[in-house]
Image 1: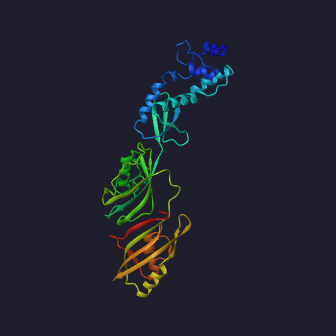
Image 2: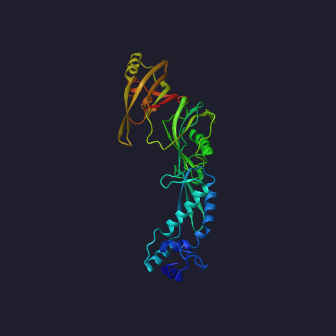
Length: 373
């Protein structure tokens, strides 16, 4: 043992790991049985910490991991004090050394690979309490659903009491305790992946009274903090209840960079205030076929251009049955009724009559086509 090591031990009881780090030499365990001045004998009990972390990670599916250490500030303060007093320059500080030692032992015990940049799970260990908090990387999926019954909203409505902020009335979710497509899909996905919550990105939306047919509406979903990362074999289409079926579910390698463009095929039922002129009907159908629709958003101070690729209309008395294909993002209700923020051209302005949607069967989504798929 070097003279500097002896000088340090004469004043401060240190374990061999903390002593070696200061003098950069392998040292025998000091004969002093007191608690290590720097780490409090953390390294002596590191196997117990490894077992605690391994137990916490046992619930999770993962291939790569990383460790975060919540250590007391006094560890570094005491080590800095010794290094200043004895003019030492250690390779690692105590926190880095503890994290490194814990990671190496965990990698051996778990037989899993360390990944400091993009791990499947991160275990945050509190050195004092020995509590372990596990954060799992989100999983991302692409799916489609159909809806064969009316009266079910797509999205979970915001809580009317707190307006989405979270309160006792809504269980601090910020959402109404009402059934929806979002709720049905969430329940199934949380059951599969054992996550904390899910976040959806929808390829369009539909009215509560609308049906979603064909191959179904596409969506992307992020499952937060999942305990399971693998998608089991599902017998699709899977009935979720309330007329909703999960038609497709695919695990993605990473978060989508952006939402894809899409087109919707729509069948709408409208009510004319008075029977429209046949000539105007013919002119409107010809004009709207492959036309551009200018849709204003006053809140964003923007005007979006959407296209219609097919437009067919059949009139029976004061009822109209319309089938058309349009770009995703076109406000179907505004286009058909002219209500709300400006949209031009719109059907009432072309026909010269007021138009309402059939409130019981407004419009159905016959199919949604993703570009590039």
